[in-house]
Length: 233
Image (cartoon, rainbow, N blue to C red):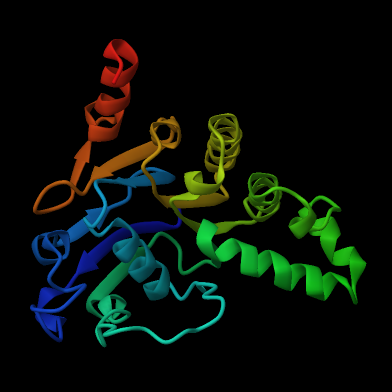
């Protein structure tokens, strides 16, 4: 365990009217305890899972690969300021880490391939193959298997978007083994009941005014999948 607690200081909010400071879970949650090596954020679209995930990552000084910057229509000037109103409590001081998002990973893969054109040995870190010559899911798994051997705090934003159910089970094995080994801690935003089932995970539900810890079987996603397979569409 590296990160123990996250606190949200509402008295430092620059505004209460604009995103992300107007999100209910941001306005009504004071602190988040992290008692287990895997913490899962679950909830419906728009509840603030990814927003909070990125803010914690920034507050921990872990780089978020952004890819190419493009113009935005009416972007909130407060959008990337939430981390300034947060405090974090470490177990034994800050550690390095990583941030993964499927939508940005392709740009990262292309950059690695460009670097490897001048230094082919670099690909040995990712299993010896170019990431861009593999399927999206295969290249993601090559990344997971390499980076999660490293001590640190690792953030994943809806990784299942790039993965088949079988590959999600493979990632679940990687997360379970790495978290049990004690060198890695994970905070994951996901809609996947497969990833939520990680045995070393605490599940935090964003479907309320404030964030609540819940049992895996009580999550809305688990119940929807269970009902679907029991009764059909």
